[in-house]
Amino acid sequence: MGGAVAGVGAAAAIGLDAWRSGAEAMPDADSAVAPSAEAVAAHGADTVPFFGTHQAGVATDAQAHAVVLGLDLLPNVNREGLRRLMRVLSDDASRLTQGRPALADSEPELAANPARLTVTFGFGREFVDRAERAAPSWLRPLPPFTIDRLQPEFSDGDLMIQIASNDPVTTSHAARMLHKDSRSFTSLRWWQQGFREAYGSVAPGTTMRNLFGQVDGTANMKPGSAEFERLVWVNDGWLAGGTSMVVRRIRMQLDTWDRLDRDGREQSVGRRLANGAPLTGTNEHDEPDFAAVTAIGFPVIPEFSHIRRARAENPDEQIFRRAYNYDGPPDSGGESGAGLLFISFQRDVDEQFVPMQQRLDELDLLNEWTTPIGSAVFAIPPGCAEGGYIGETLLG
Amino acid sequence: MMSSRYFSRRSASARVATATAVTAFAVLTLAGCSGGAVTESTSTSVQQVTSAADSVTVVDAWAKAAADGMTAGFGVLENSSADDITLEAASTAAAHMVELHETKLDDAGAMTMQQKEGGFVIPAGERFVLEPGGNHLMLMGLTAPLVAGQEVEFTLSFADGSTLNFSAPIKDYSGANETYSSDHGDGHGDGHDHSEDHDHENSHE
Image (cartoon, rainbow over all chains, first blue to last red; front, top):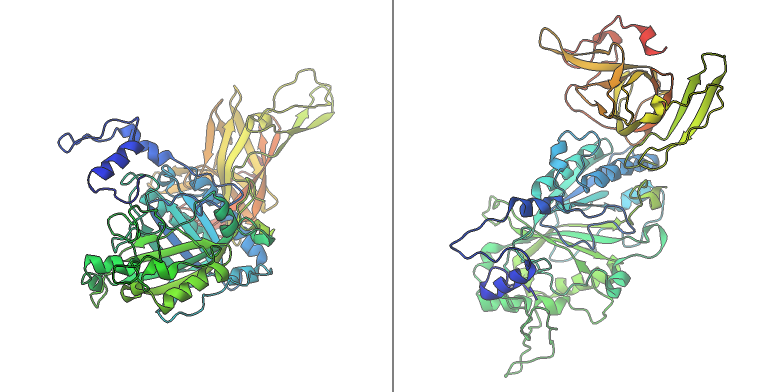
């Protein structure tokens, strides 16, 4: 299995070779053979279907680059206006994701390499209110947590657009096109950019690493599994085939993290840095043994560790994580600009996300080095068929 | 509802029999992407000729949103026949008048938009592109605002007398050289000259 050892020694080479079996042999350090032009260009042509029961970009393997937009509706936009807005945006997305320019695209050439582009739309409470329909009870800001230092500039919003692709130029162009077409209906509230390992850096399916250096997202439901179907997708009302989304901007204090030694870092999470294995295990996907104790009787996975605090007793209290790293210049106080753009999908925010976040708020050593500075909740509507548009179950 | 790819949805073929005053109208149904169609006609004319409207497909059509005055329509006209096809005129309920416009550099080096003499000739087997800064449908005297996300219906009139209807979604667009003055005599765009003495007879024959 690939695990999270990419780039480290022989284990990584084995993983990459298995992935690339059939292609040319792994080059040694001296030969530095570049991949063929065709092999490289082929990845740019990869597409993810836009039309379907569910919107793409939820169960889709996370691409390397993402931009998430939060938009506020202008005062005069009513139900009819929302319908027009979503028709335009859906049409743009259906073209761009397939490697075709949008209508009226000023830079059509920038649409040529979709590189698995997905565009996912989400609605805030105000959007559903303007649509004059009932919103799910969880569609509101999360309850306040003591660790929160939320900034309005990174929080809330009436309409969310998640744009993700393995190509950052593509991502940027799609975000620009969608934003342009939203401007007569909305104002931009926030723009959050994120990244993971580049396509081709690690074997597909490798759990990402965050900027603390940790393997991030090991315990995660598998798209397509019965568990995922049951716990992610909503199955009634206008949201049937959709889900909920939590977006939280988590700032990392890398400078104070620097002062923590390797052992301390592993204790704070409960996993080994080398491969993401729980402290009680050997491999990344070993099940953590929360009952295990050391020779002198302390829990091997500390009480305060992140994975213990996040773990629910009720197996239905699970979320599907699909986060991105973010980075930026240090602020004027010298604090690092790095962080995690936490994104999760779950059928019911109140049942599946909030209890976990409350436990983390009460106790999680990782809180020493992280601060939530943005938070938003959205309803992710179902997919549509060709000829339709996203949001038609709410607006049609 | 908006389709992600616009094809001509229906075409009406108007054939004037030269021997008699009987005019035959046929309603054709597009079968999928190939554009194959079955022609029904009640004309007494002997020859069945594929009309221009049957041979032209409009794809990726769109019109620029505008509150009033003038705006433009764009798209790609595809001619699947073995003959050149001349588009002579266009009309829409959304505007008092539609002209076929070309964009040219004048002697002073400025971009000028003016009515295209003789209409748009779509070469056999080829595409004719209507795009900002190039050839386009000029809508003048909007009857109502065009807002993003709505659709506008056009009728194209070809030299052989056949007509083709298509629907174009409306999009916001503030791209280069696409500003139109609502004052007819002002021309449109920076430094663009809109010819005052256009020949109305050319628009509808």
